[in-house]
Length: 397
Image 1: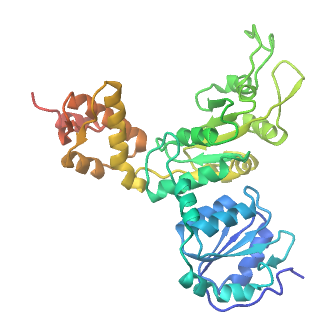
Image 2: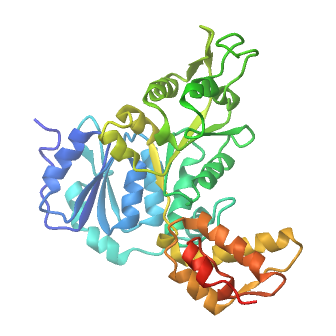
Image 3: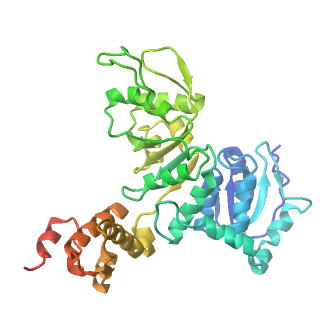
């Protein structure tokens, strides 16, 4: 008999979220809640649950005590600060549920709306802690709600050894997030080694990652340490991880599981202490589902996913970012930052920004050059990359 058979039946209620890596447990709770809660969604872990809490209006979270990525108590602490209206019911992966103390589940759910209506503002300490959690990360600009979510997630996972998958379109700042994760971690004094998996030929990738000994192959006139051993004690960022060949994916998975490597040309096994981050600008889950990327490696890399918003999704940051880029270029020349005219701002806001923040940076660099030593960037200084735009809007004279 299921351990959830005796779960109380309660009246119609608001949205419920079920967070557990145990699919059988999720399904049992889902079956009990379905029809009594709208909506009911499932999350695979703590990070997934926090991301879904950000995007919906939830009344109850059923939280597994044994999460694959975060400590359940840590997740509860975040929820108490950020989502005080959400009631948390703890689940056990080996069956059963706990409503917390001697207060049973049905009472907690029945009174959830009352708790939501009468909740008190957080203390000054909680407000201060939340403000610190949403401050921009080192090297990053923006205070939009979308970016505040990223800041919170990064600060939550940075102190841990958890593998992080940073997902986002080209130009959204994935490497900046990786550098912030490293800078905020206990490993900040050790190396951050960045490997672009798409930039290294497949025939050289294994030797680049794991290293080799002298004479391991033709042309190996001296031994090479390898990128992974070079990151010992620190952090390894595998950028464009989707481009990693299938053969190398198996070897990387073994390293992630065993924390051991074997250099080419030797049978010696080396233990390596490395925190691994991965970045992808494609739908890695989709590739794994289609058999184009190992599913076991995907789940290992995506222990804690962080998805970066496009520039269109963080439009409130557009002008601050543009002003930041102008200030950086002016400072390099020993000049004061030029202002953006209202017409220039309107032109920037009307652009779709398919290249995201990187495209904006290049546009502002061109604008800075065209504005010369003037104190204002006008609309006529804003050029986008389309050739037709460059021809039709060339300044007179």
